[in-house]
Amino acid sequence: MEKGERRVDGFRFLPPGLAAWIRTFIPQEEFSGRIPWTPVAKPLKDATMALVTSAGISLKSDRPFDMEREKREPLWGDPTYRVLPRGTTEKDIQVHHLHINLKPILQDINVVLPLTRMAEFEKEGIIGRLAPSAYSFYGYQWKGREFLKQAIEPMSRTMKEEGADAVFLTPA
Amino acid sequence: MGQAARFLEEAGFSTVVLTPTHEFHRAVGIPRQAAIEYPYGRPVGQTGDREGQRQVLLASLEVLEKARKPGETWHLPFVWPEEPKNTDWHPPEMSPIIKAHLEEIKQARKKEAEAREVLPQRH
Image (cartoon, rainbow over all chains, first blue to last red; front, side):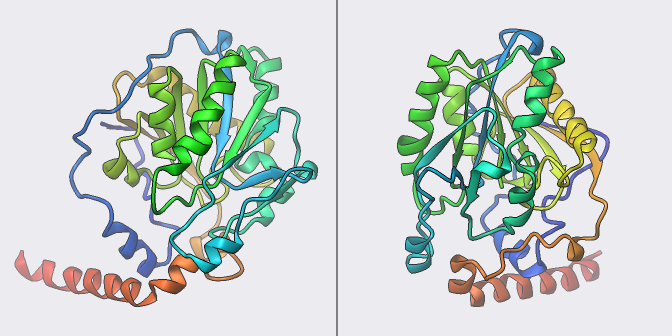
């Protein structure tokens, strides 16, 4: 079901050839399978929010995402993840991603992982709490679902331990 | 990202994906998404634009609260201030998958262009 007055064109920024190619992988008809669903249990002002991005961000002190193997095997994407503590800023990070321009993220982490903005919302009482940990994995997962086991499952365990109710996800 | 959201919903978290390509929902089945027409790598907004980023985030959080059924896409009204060709979102080097599939990409573009030429004649 689609809502909103203005319809977004998700292909507007892509070159026409690449857009046409990607469209060959997307069905014309609506998704008809089962969609998992956890109803929102409490108002935002009481909820703990965790942030996840697929932008390939890691702390400078942590190991970077593996771009070299992808260069050798174009259908492989690093299936691991990194923890980014709240309070992390662009000064603390490195970004590895072969599909986007990294400069804006290195200038302002909030363009893809809005840690500072959400901390403001916490202070203003718009959200209950920003979780102590945020997470990045690497969004280019063409081949398989290994990243669910290697990245999303372990991060979900930490989210539970830290009392997260809701998760805000930003693809790169 | 859709698969990650599905996994997390299954694990008991309410999720919202702020996506520049909401069309992937048709392939994946994404629980809740806020669609935005912003360039890749900057779904929340422009660098240094605190107020713009806040507006996008508030609208996305609203989707979390107002979506009632699995699979809802809410289209956000925000407009990126630059034309696509000026957004400079591309990586400095062509990505490995594109390098490896250049011929298929050309063919897909050709097929779409041909389909567009044929369609008006049918009406």
